[in-house]
Amino acid sequence: MESLKVSNDALFILLGAIMVLAMHAGFAFLELGTVRRKNQVNALVKIMADFAVSTIAYFFIGYSIAYGVNFFVSAETLAQKSGYDLVKFFFLLTFAAAIPAIVSGGIAERAKFNPQLIATFLLVGFVYPFFEGISWNDAYGFQAWLLAQFGAKFHDFAGSVVVHTVGGWIGLVAVVLLGARRGRYNKDGGISAHPPSSIPFLALGAWILTVGWFGFNVMSAQSIDKISGLVAVNSLMAMVGGTLAALAIGKNDPGFVHNGPLAGLVAICAGSDLMHPLGALVTGGVAGGLFVFMFTLTQNRWKIDDVLGVWPLHGLCGAWGGLAAGIFGLQAFGGLGGVSFMSQLLGTLLGIGIALVGSFIIYGGLKKIMGLRMDAEEEFNGADLSIHKISASPERESGW
Image 1 (cartoon, one colour):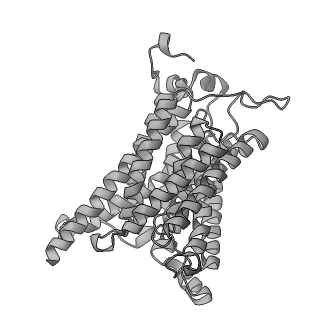
Image 2 (image 1 turned 30 degrees about the vertical axis):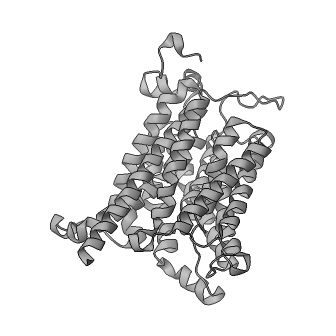
Image 3 (image 1 turned 90 degrees about the vertical axis):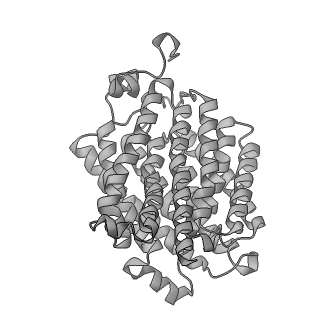
């Protein structure tokens, strides 16, 4: 029976890894549908290349920083326990690789290719696993201090803060250092619309992400005996809450409607194993409204050209999710308890701080050394032709 359980656990987490790997297709198509046609090929290539670079960085460096584990042993040793340790690495890698996939959407249409690959290696190799180790492996004493001070550790079941907040705030720094797309904001204060190239592809990306997210959340249990239907239903309710809030506040805009469920799912990751479904519904609803309001504010008022809105979607909704776990996870609000709002607040702030400092060092350094963005002619022609020497469609159908 023990052998069967180990094999079942390996299969369980392998299926989770495959579902989250599929989410990277969602990142790709969400970006492909949002950018203009002359940048569609680049959107697809970036996500694939970033995942490959992330794998190398996490395998050789990042996983060791986060968990103190390396793979420099014999294959016979690695194959023990049905290879569970290997598929656990695969599963956690798909989370780590979400960091550059998140950033990619913010810096789309004007970023150089090679500097972003270097940034991906450094982020996944050093910055992300540092906070991951603190949050999920009790490294460096932070969790022990929170437990002693507030009676509970920082709780992030599936990565509202560890993955999404960190990725979103890294993306904000990259977007600000990169600058707006040429022609996006006029000198007289006007705004030039850069409409999405394909709402169907945008919707497809959102749907792929939404479906894969149930592997992202439910299979964060990492073993079959810890699986919880509460996580699944809470994810569902948050998804629905985010969708309906974005639909109403976004006035039926399809871009908001399809990002609404993602906002809800980002927010529910942290407390999905603790909340009552009604708390999850509220958490998702607030996230959906927060995304619409802050996306509009950053784009139109603050003139931050975050193409896919990765800071509002991941950075802010993720931070809200970290805090929401400390509210709706409490027994007084129908949750299972075992959380502290102060621990959630401090853990979330630490994640933001690490993301800001790490991103500024990496992107600031790359900007000085090799530059971050394409020149004016390359940007006008589009990343597809400038970087990859091919367009997504025959020229007569490109509709630039």
